[in-house]
Length: 179
Image (cartoon, rainbow, N blue to C red; front, side, top):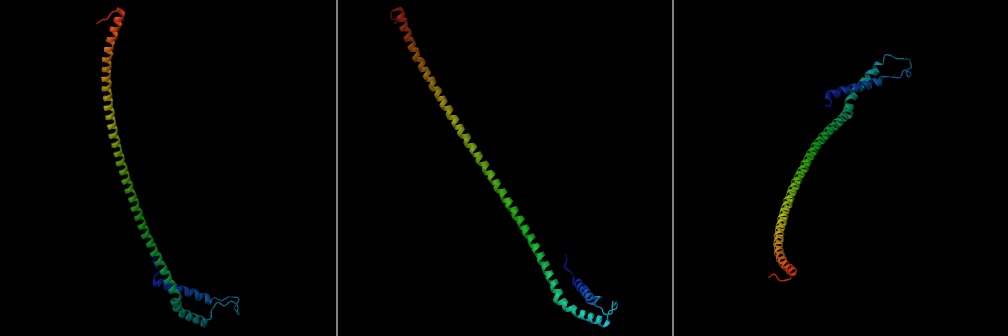
């Protein structure tokens, strides 16, 4: 709301003065000695008007202007406080936006680090698995070769023994040596 203009304040002061004058002129009907008087005493009325006119400027200077000045100062303080509150709100929103941006950035960095660590762990696991598989296959090949050699050796030994055993059995059955 815009502040009242100087003319509006003077008009307000004048209307308040007229109202006060009307209150001063009003008299109790019961206090009247001669009954109800409808026409006021003109000398008293002129004196009161002169008194009122003389009171307008000191009352305006001493009462109304300080009140209006205090109200104006209060309005200015309120507007200043509102402006400051709006500035603080804007700063708070900016700080909140910066905070949310920083949090999002940290989350993104953490997610990237997590993905990199996971990829690295998978690569290490895959390499170790391939190394273990290669070592196992090498061990199995060596074992198969060893088993093959031992099997061949056992066959040779068994073949030799079978021949010897067959000769011995034939010698026993025939009762003579087959040499």
